[in-house]
Image (tube, rainbow, N blue to C red; front, side, top):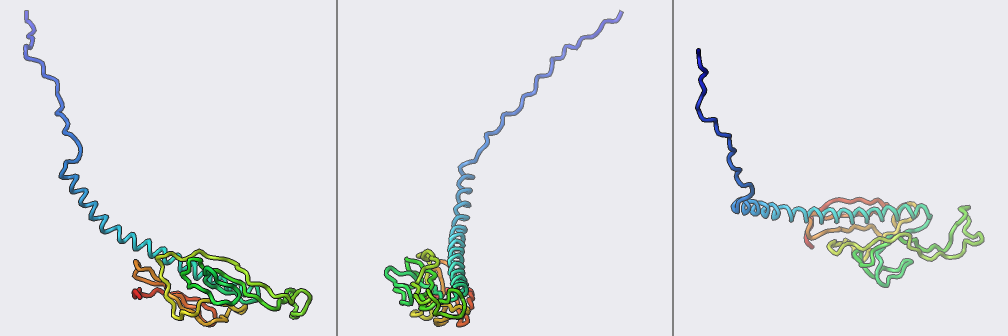
Length: 208
């Protein structure tokens, strides 16, 4: 009779996993990361500042151009002269010369100039009843002051009003101004021709 053999080998020990290495940054890795971040900030912050200044200058130039177009359209609608002019602290309206420039803290405004005679019923006769009274100048729309960082350079320093006739042409002299920012390499040169046409081009900032 055969007898079964019983193995006396020891049972295998259960597997144990190796302890996980601690996760995180070493002091050297942290210092390298902070150094790289500092370099990137030194490169990016000036570029971002120039972008902000350029966008602000573009916004203010576009607002001024929009005001010119609006004044011209209002002159045609009202069939009378309409002026875009700065608003100084004590500036009188109605053809009086402004006491401040385009960078006045008071901003600037579209003003309907007074007309001694109005053809209210548009029959070609200015002597109808009620059409003899003069109309006082009225502010149609005002605009906030330009940013303090915006520099305005004007070719004709004495030409501080732009008056459009009902036919869209200028009643004042042609005007050319530059809006610049010391932090931006470009200016916006805005020109109003005698025909009332408004154009804008980018020119280099000369610092003057």
